Image 1: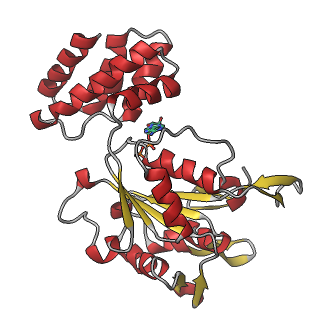
Image 2: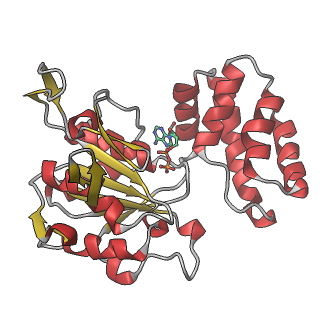
Length: 294
Ligand code: ADP
């Protein structure tokens, strides 16, 4: 990847380096692929709703790949012809993330000050899909940017430059949100959420999850099915003090450890039981489920 500079320790990459080059593995669970494709064609912003590790990020990567119209362009870095695909710019939102982090800022360097576009501005300019992961975590001032970008105007105001940028043709804003973390303070405002269609994600049904685990971890099919059954049972423990059920991601981790020769019970202990909770009673309940399967 090309290194174009740094902002507070973060490395900025050229936008064309963000494209999804290889087809990501994604197993569709319902009609989400068709829904997203249709929304994209209509440039309707999309909200992906669901628990952590349920496949939202993988889905966006897959959709960016699918929607990418392959065409050749010259790489700014090497001067060679490269295949250009739909750029995808992902921003993991956190509580200190401000509108300036998304839009850009002036940087001081040896030649004086220069403006550096933030990830949202880059996405708007090149016509990328911009994925704001866990958007409720970000500072409230980010809604000032989201609103004009998600209605018919498709505009990005850059206050510090006194500019308003019209989004390029391919641009689409996609955000994700985990209703499980919901609190009065960290909820999506109605004025924001009613600008998106919402696709709900949940953990896949057992057979589909087993397929995903086998494919992603390299473990055998039987182990994958056992892990999927374990996942289902652990998720049923939610009423017994478990904050959030085990994610597909953690089941894949357990599968990877097992595929590498770690004993299944030990693999489940570190990838599932201890990863999920610090509460010793809940840990005991999970262990019981593990020993009933492995
Ligand atoms: P989220 O963004 O919802 O937190 P991710 O997209 O990172 O979750 O998913 C976590 C992992 O689960 C992925 O890396 C992938 O291995 C697996 N996964 C979950 N759902 C699917 C799916 N439908 N198809 C393929 N892999 C999936």
